[in-house]
Image 1 (cartoon, rainbow, N blue to C red):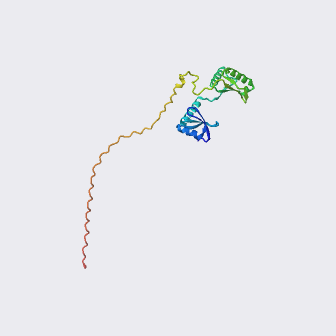
Image 2: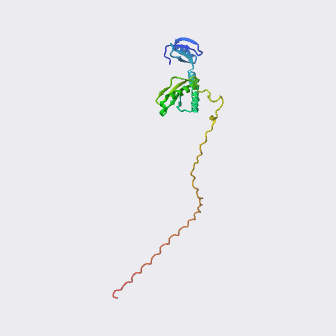
Image 3: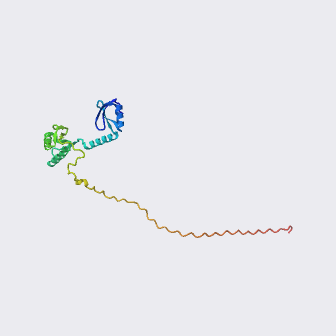
Length: 238
């Protein structure tokens, strides 16, 4: 909601319509089926434009994403040397520093001393001076070498513009796929998984059909016991 009483109006074609009250500008935008969008809120009076607000937000988001994709922040890289570094290692460090500088990065060249090497700081200064001389076509020293503790270092700024994220790889020609990009990852050794198998079951024995039930004989009725003989009567006087 635009709360400023007066605004400077620009139509959808970019033509200036002048300064007018905000309600009138809003009415004109609605008649055209568009929105009244504030495009310069810090101006006096603020500048508004007849736009499709949804399309405007989409285009604005798209431009921001494109800008982030192309921009590249400058990073700080470090190259470490030692007073007893060999010629081959020194050349390798030089080539690595040139790659950093070609990408637009800043570098920090550090010489680390060990033990009694710290008593000869001039060796570190000469080494840094030789290093700076080798990469002078790609970077420039920002200050003189500084000795801090057991290390001496110097920072160098790149003479090249930072490369965007979508720039082609500097090590390969456009359209050429590097060999290491398609290298197959060695397969992991196959692990044998032991799965418990169920114990073999004995073949089922078919049960014999049950024999027909034989009815049990009924128990015989108990025989009546013989009655005890009655005693003979005894006659008196005998």
